[in-house]
Every structure is written in C-alpha cells, then in structure tokens.
Image 1 (cartoon, helix red, strand yellow):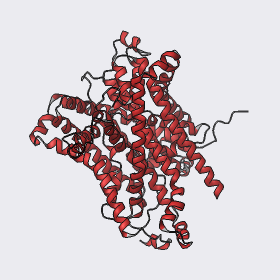
Image 2: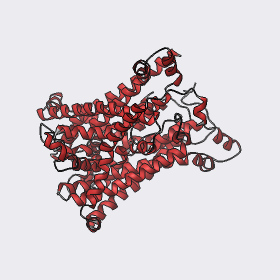
Image 3: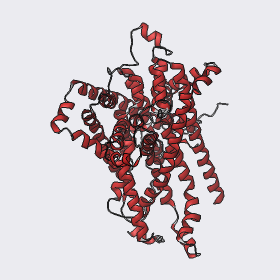
Image 4: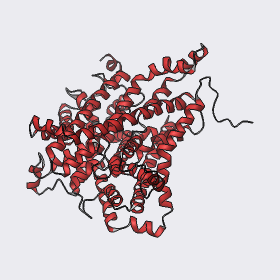
Length: 279
Length: 305
C-alpha cells in the first residue's frame, strides 16, 4: 500500500514546484529562524533568565506592551468609527479616505518615524500647541504610544470593514420592528456580531506594535529605563556584540507575538464553529 | 443603485450622527495619517527646491538609491518566482500538510523587523554559525550588501505567494485540465492559461512586495550596522536625520513617500481591476471575495487552519 500523500491530478509539475517551494522556504525562512530558537535553547537557563529580567529589559517590556495596548485600544475606538463611516455612509471623498487608511503600510517606517517626530516635537505643527499645555508629545512614552497608534490603525479598519459589510440588514430591520431603539440595536445586535472582528483587529494591531521599530525610534528619544522599546534593546545588545543577550530578548518577543497570533487563530476557529452550530 | 433597491434597505443613521462620525473619521485620519505625509514634503521643501536637488545629487544619496534598487531588484524577482511556484503547488494540487505549508510561508509576517535581521546575524555574523567559515574565505555578508539583500528577501518573502494562493484556489484547475487534455504541455498551459488568469493578482503582489523591499528599515538596519558603508534610502534617511541634517533627510524621505503614494494609487486601481464590485459607489458595498489582501497579515484568514 502506498501512503496516499496527495490526490491524483492530471496537471504536471507537482514534485518540482513543491520541492522548490520547500527548498527556498527552508533556506530563507526556516533555517535562519530555527537558529534563533536553537541559540536560545543552548543558553544556560540562569543566563537566559538573568538577561530577560534585567531592570532595563523589564522597563522596555512594560513600555512596549503598555504603549502597544493603549495604541490598539485607541485604534479599536477610532477604527470602529472610521470603518462604520466607510461602510455605511456615502460622502464625497469616501474612496480617498478608504485608500488613505493603508498609508501606514505604504509609508516606510523610517519615514513615518521622522515625520511623526517633526509633527509632535516641541516646535512641530502640533507639538507647539501641546507642549504649552504640559503635554510632552515627543521623546516621551506618549510619543511611543502615538507612533504605535499610527501603525496599528489599518489592521483594525481593514478587519472591521468586511464584518460590517456582511451585517444582515434584515436582522437590524427585525430588531427595529420589534421595538428596539437605535442604540439597543447597535448594542444588542450589531456589536455582538462584529465582536470577533473587533478582537481580531485589536490583536493584529497589538501584535504589530510589539515588534515595531522604525516608526518609534525617532519619536521615543530612547532614554534608558524610560522610553526604550524592546526592539531597540535588541539592536543595542547586538551593537555591543552581545549576541546571546539579543537572542534571548528576541526569543521572548517572538514567543509573545506567536502567542497572540495563535490566540487570533483560536478565536477565528471558535467563531467559525459557533457559526456552523448556529445554522 | 439598482442592487441596493432590491435588498431590504436599512434605515440609515440620522444626519447629525452621520456628520459627527464622518467628522471624527476625517479628523482622526487627517491628524494621524495625512499630517505626517504632508510634513515630509513640507520639510523637504523648507530649504527650497535647489536644496532638494543638492541633497539628491550627493554621491552618498546616489549610493543609497542604487543599493535600494539593487536589493529590491534581487528580492522582488526571486520572491515573484517563488510565489508563482509555491501557489502552483498549493492551489492546483491536494496534499497533506497544505495548511501548515501556507502558515510557514506567512511566517515572516509574524516576525518583527529587528528579529528578521537578527536571525541572519546569528547565521552569518562574526560570532554566528557560519561566521568563522566565511571569515576564512573572506566573504562578507553582515555589514555588507549581501546581508541587506538577504534581510530584504526575508521580509518580502510572503507577499506574492499570499496574493496568488487564494486567487488560484478560487479559480480552480478546470481550465488547466482542459488544456492538458487537449495536448498542451505543462509550460504551454502555464503561459497561455494560468498566467493570463493571475496577471493582475500577480502585479498586485509585486507592487506590495516592492514597496516593502524599498522601504524596509528595521531588518536592514540590523544587518547593515551603523557604519554608514551600506546604506539603503531608509538607512540614509536615518543617518542624515541623526546628523541633524533634517532638510536632506526629509528630501530623501519624500522619495520614499512618493513611492508609497504611487503604491497606494496602484493598489487601489488594481483592487478595482480585480474586484470591480468592491469600489462601486452607492448602495451597501458587496463583499469582496477573497478579502483584498493587505501589506501585512490580514492574518485572520491565513493563520486559521
């Protein structure tokens, strides 16, 4: 009996294309990436623990996770409004607004970094109004949060848009005809339906923010223990030729972002199953 | 509006709410997204047009532009070929472990830029796995051009494949089967049938891939080091900025911003080309199928098994 690895097809080229795919994938992605885990695994546990719990590193986790969390939450709030506006309303400039949402993806991160710094620094377009109010919008933790909000917005909007488009108009009509107020319809009918998309968008924005480097390093000011993000610490360690330290911190961050993506998967799977049951 | 009329129309929000929501959206997007774009060009032009040209005509600027073009010129074609080959294997055949393979292809999107550079330093750096061997042969990869190319290759790895796989899966393989049955060779089938079917999706993937290749900063910054020998445009922007030469930094940045704008325009145009119904104005928008891919993980679909 042959192990039935694939179903028969008349099309040629399966072995060749799959082989090339696996080879290239291994060379470019799998081998280098597994090296990171191999390096971490061969580190003595004591050393690993000492590196990843240094006060400076702990402070960077706190800032990175905290600012990413706040940024993602701000994006959920405003991203919902933007997505709702794009899906539900027709107004001049809607398509332009829609296209602009992807700007944080299209603009190289170094460019967004220096641009945000120029705007929010003390003499910048907005900084000159914020600083007199006592709001230090650049070279501060607030600056980090602003940059991480900037890069996260498209994730929330682009995840919510299809979910809002799929909403069944009949369900809303039914809710309204049964006497629900507009607010009740939103709160009881619309929100629960799009909640998985909201959570997914939130998690994607959060995961992206955790690893962000380019758009943050300029506006953060990089003061040790205060405004150093974890990505920057990895680079600092590398520049001191402390490969082991850089690798250990990188492993922690990589595991964190994989865990978030796994969470998204589980959520999607769970929602998919719940939908199937519902039908 | 014909399509909208046949559906039950939802009562729209009251006008005051619409105006409020549109106002908030425009204000938020304006401050957070449009202002940074505007400031790049404003700062670039702050020293006058002649200063711009002076900054652009420096040898270091040319060097950076050339290296950026080289890195993109190598990594985009390689990932283009890989994307086509991988999606042929994945979309046209049924085999075990397919979803795992798709997740693995998407892996680089889940790895942050700095870590993407770090893994190559661990492999080729002086203290890296192959460091001693390379040093003995006098081959420089890290802090040199090959490292920049490799890091770019890694971060742009999934773009074309993730665009083509859903597209080719959706198209199925009936046309190809017919071609083979009529006596066409595998190559003929690919060139005459498959390629024309996927050309717009392919172009879409290439454009996104190219934008990332030319704009990548974190990964490239790690492998290039901070010695200023191997600068791509983004690295040169950083160098100029840290030397307090803001007008020149913003001039170089405006090149990248222009690239970003062209990318956005091309992306919007291609989306309309691929899914004509998604951009119709008026009436509830039809759901795009498959969801238009983004620059980064719309990982929702892709990571799900």
